[in-house]
Length: 164
Image (cartoon, rainbow, N blue to C red; front, side, top):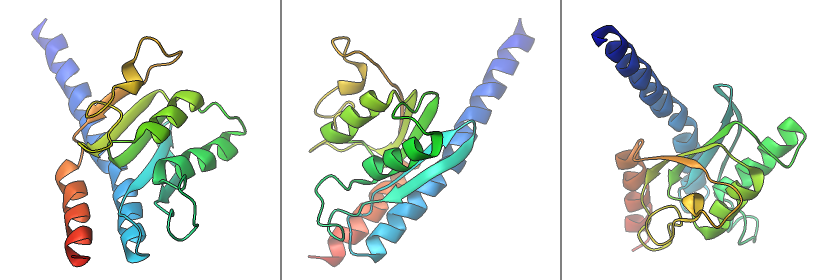
């Protein structure tokens, strides 16, 4: 029994380590967005342990209010798989998604979301709304919060501090 318990914790540690490693792609995209003058939010879509799509915010550069990192990464991933449903995918994003992005994840049938920092002003996962777990909707998404959260918050603080 103890042996099984140790195996369980080993698997959990491996999953947590993988999440931190895969979140790096989203953090890189957030840094690139900041260099372009965009709010530093990044996202990456992972299927079978491989990053198949990644993006940073482009709302200002594209003059597009829907050009959030999550939306852009989901669009790229859908093209990659050749389907509007991105089944068995994991979306990594540096901040808790807004209602628009959470809705897009539901429509894409994303299996899991991993994000860094909570967004108390616009978060639609657990801060302001709980869209991804709402039983009234036709799809629910497993969520892991707080992965590389400190790095995500630091990027946002630095970005906004430089603009004050």
